[in-house]
View (cartoon, rainbow, N blue to C red):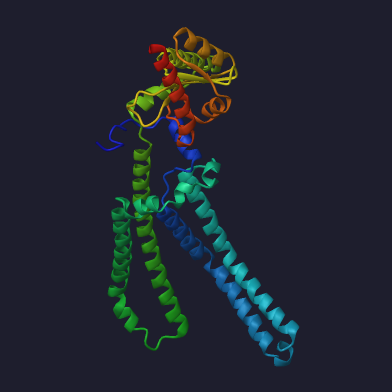
Length: 355
């Protein structure tokens, strides 16, 4: 069974909020690009007279400036000409660029919301994993992305063909027309094709956004167990949560103390730390079944003495085990020799008692 086969429940608001904080949102870059393209065409159609007027004025000033070569070759003359040209270009393009920028910001905010996801800015080594990158590139998503790319090329090609073929006769009639008339006709034709392509791209972006939302919702699905656990914790007062944590801690400590009588040895330091070890030969190394500090260590030692479990004083080993090994874990390799010496000593003493 697949790992996510049991995730059949819709995500809760808490799960969605956590995903949003991590930057996991449904977002379509194609929809952003389509909205910016449509906004750019609309602004261009409205501001075209302004742009043409600014460029015409700049061209007239430039021609007037170069009419006097002696003044043009001086540093101030060239500098003034370049400055005026750049200023005219900026004044002509700035309104359209501003509209496109605003459209891009609105498109992004409309998809992901206005709440910033600062967690997504933190470096994540998993993003540099070649395996994760290969999954993103060669996963099931590649088929949708390939189909989307083919659809974009096919739609744009079809729009260009449908727009140009019926007007081929009109293009042949441009012979003998003046430059202004030809420019006006070609501008209208190109603008009409661009508008149709932008609307088609907008439709593709909307489909892509729907697919991204579907994938996002699927990734957020929860199992019934996760849903039950979240409902247990959701909306509980801080006092109740604290009481639950105390009960869980008490239950875990009770289970730990119940394992002490079955241990093979308890290593102490002598009163600050106590670690109970058990080795039955079925696992590659001894297991830490209980550990504690100060009062808990005294309880472990007292219980071990009452249960006739050997208590061995080894300060460095007790401190190292308490610091580096959790309950239920095996002793690490760097402590094998020290633990083996303790167990060997315990076994020798046990044999002498039974002899």
